[in-house]
Image (cartoon, rainbow, N blue to C red; front, side, top):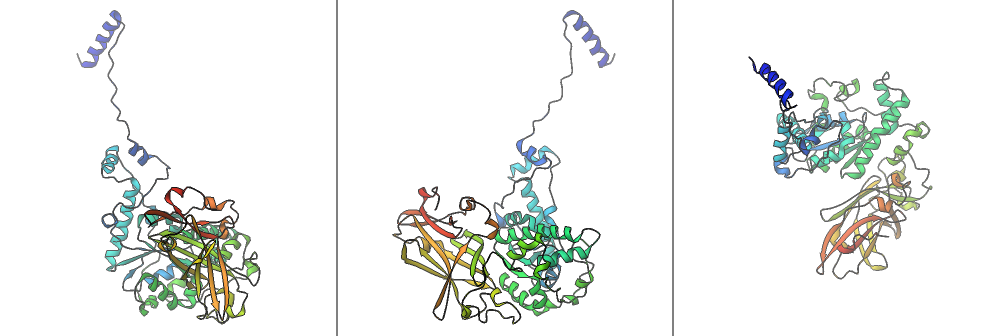
Length: 478
């Protein structure tokens, strides 16, 4: 008699006399840990964090990322950069699309014991792929140019805290035209414009939030050596003339989806870009971004006026670094004379070109004009950058709370111009932005107290800086 027959007879007898039966106990189900649930939940956007120890967790040091929309000349630029003896610029790698999943709960628990989340493992994988490619090249600096990186710039900057960024801009209408012409069966011109706006907005968000170096496709095609020299200067390496001869290097096939595959890029030489569109040719969908990138004049800026708009504020490492751009034209003729090296360009488009004009950041304490600081501004065409040491803003004996006003100033032949730094135009339609756009504070020790130094936007949308005791920091700056 087998076991099943015996169990059946036993249950029949037990049921008759006691009303009870014997049943096989169900297999115990192991309770999923919280870590396992987070790792396997489909469709969840995971959290990510910087490496605990970059020296241990990262093999690639100071990678360079080209942040740019599609059809903006990134393939040309990466091939030129790849001609440098130290720069390796492979095809688009799309590493941010590489994901890590756990096959079992035990694998999740094992990684949890190592304090490794799913996104930590993905970052290790991304870094390993880039490092393998870099080692194979025999060079020491990797340049990555996948356009979709513009949509993940925060995570890329978190994955590699020492990453450096080069922003490549192009006239948005030219991008849309090139995108449509590359594959007319895939999109209409109107659809190309909408898709272009998607990419350009992502690139602009990255440009506002990350420090980096800005170049333009139009400059790359007219003065490639000048653009390459500027990038090399930004990266801290020497320019090499061989970079221009990308046509003499064996690149192999350029498959669609991993870079430009058209004949123009295959020619092996830098070619003149298409003529810029007329203002009337800019569709409504692309007007705002064209204005933001300086390709179209802003109708809201009165003729003959000059203003300055903040494009980025980075309070860290004991500095407040401010980047921005000039809008409009200086009213004084002597401030526009000789402002650009291009005789065919509009002088008002380059407020910094005249070596006789020296723009500086004037920092003055509200209500105490005797407290005045002054810092030189570094200008690149119509854009500027300036850094302010936070320790200068909290000297011993300062009366708190204190507020500092910021102006750009230029002095030419005794004519002093003052330009206020304003919030970005993309925030103009947001009410109470001074409470929405919040910058981190930095600490300065002074007179046995800890002073918090913090940038903020005023109710008039101007950028200012406040100094408060740590206990008073919760109070809103007005």
